[in-house]
Image 1 (tube, helix red, strand yellow):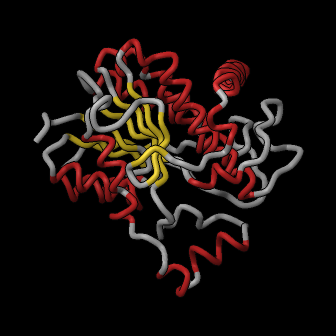
Image 2 (cartoon, one colour):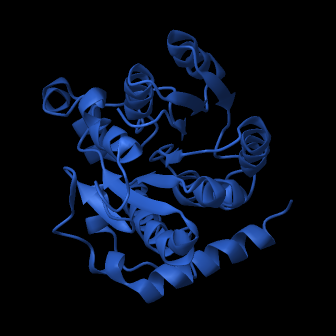
Length: 280
């Protein structure tokens, strides 16, 4: 097998994150578990004998604390899997003043990656984003209203955040690939997990809680396949940096905005502006 890697997985207390952590551990890698729930995160970590950290991505101070702990705790990070995410109900601001879905799905992983960027470049790391084919359904991205204050809808906001994951991947590749970082985003499939437990979307609730439709969804173990494949794979050989993957192949159908390099650059710059304005 390939050399053992240090793999940090956020959102690893449940679902595909936990399934990927278990599989990568069995394959001999050193897995670092990050989750919002102390109880569930600790349980998965004890099960496989892994290090674990508690971080709620709805609190950016948790993200800063996590980054500091990871920076001091490990000589290198070979893989950062930005897997934490969710879709939430009525519009609600976090303690940081941002819409919750936008912060948890895009802003927090962006911040974590930026705070770890020196270690990631030195480690020649792979940075993996768990996105979704929901990005295809995202409307026109409004860089002046990333919080969706003017047009909030649970799935509209979620789909936009998944498009932002892909754009972040493309711009991370553009800015840092020459320094050693490889970046990829992927769609895990329609997986039966609890990530949408707080969604107010009737369609999403029906698809994920109805017994009949839930039986048609993929398992977390199958959903973790691409995360494990990307984490173990060699960028440039097994997969190409900067791409968005579905079923281990570059996606054929994409939202046209996902390939807009100018939009990717502007989203990066706008995200950094928002973080600078956010109270420290």
